[in-house]
View 1 (cartoon, rainbow over the protein chains, first blue to last red):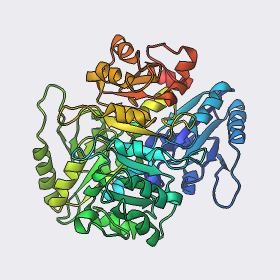
View 2 (cartoon, chains in turn cyan, blue):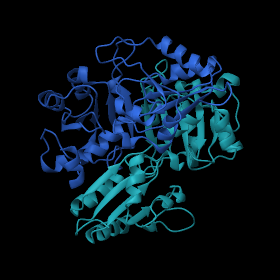
View 3 (cartoon, rainbow over the protein chains, first blue to last red):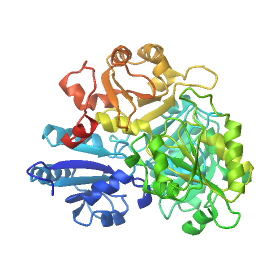
View 4 (cartoon, each protein chain N blue to C red):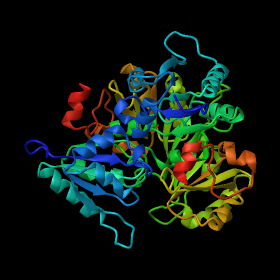
Length: 265
Length: 265
């Protein structure tokens, strides 16, 4: 418990899954937590790093109904006002998707002080698994992180995204992978390299590689679903698996070391 | 030293500067390093985490001439072939800019096994300092990480990037901030919120906020230079500093806690 009545909230990024991908700072903050609010998609073993904390699961999966956002925000404020150190844990980096903006605004309005601890977003872990840079300079000048899951159920402007020539890292796109790839094929060559990485950066990571024209079918055939990152762009074609067999699919090991392969097995 | 003759290379992401923003995995890998190749912009204190390693600086700053890329690649291969664990350290996340793609390809051609350890890229740290989500869903569907420093000295297609409606996180843009903001003003309202964060996620972080039309002058007036991240987009307008004074500039503390302010002071 923090001294006096000075409670606070720390927004902690849990990274893609593997607890070793937490930052040192995240581990320190968790060790001092009085209350931990745990999002869905966060490795549940993270609570072992917060042995003194009361843990509250506020996830939206696992058969439970979603915890209303307003309730989560009130909960954080209430505990902080009681002088407690509240640690709000979000998957990946808390500042990419995941409604941190709304939670920060609510806490700010309530006068509760907040710290933010960054983390590894899952598209980076997906690229690591494939053994590729997201932005190989032979191919592009950057990368776009976009969510396919929009508030109003509309679509991102795939044409405009494709027109940038950048690598696309698509979050939350698995439920509509067929339609989004079909739309992208209108703007990019069907032969553009693509990959799907499910549970990137966690022990059960699975990957398929292919092309924009083939990747949806490959991912379905391999049984990949959410949560997964869809990567599209020529930079992704640098993955080792493409060198072996451009149209191959299956679970790849990328350029992982022998130790890494053993660990994944 | 690794057993037998099985050397390897691990590409380690050093994050934005603060050693506490290293991942647990990065710290473990550094502790087992025989040789550390250190990029420029990496906090030099990182070598304290690799007490047994021979440290080789291959940076491109500090008055020294750049170490040729081919030499760095040969060096890694040579040490790995001698059975050593070579740790190649890059700032931010190694898979965003920074030529990891070329180094991975060279090591793969040479048959050297490589692991990759992800990290926090500096645009995430910049957003944390400002206290904003990069992708507040009231404002955008994603974020673009783009380098302003192109191999052929050309410019990214700013019009196409602006047309996506996404937050822009511009790396290596400080030497041309005036011209790139002027170009973006042709495609986005001059009143679009913008920020510059120098040395994001390190002890000497400095921030200015303003608009696309004003940010270049604010950044120059505050004496900010490289390395810095330029953030542009309505999501950035959620920073606490905008609520206080939309056109303010100076070194902001965002929504940092009292502890954080003391630490930065």
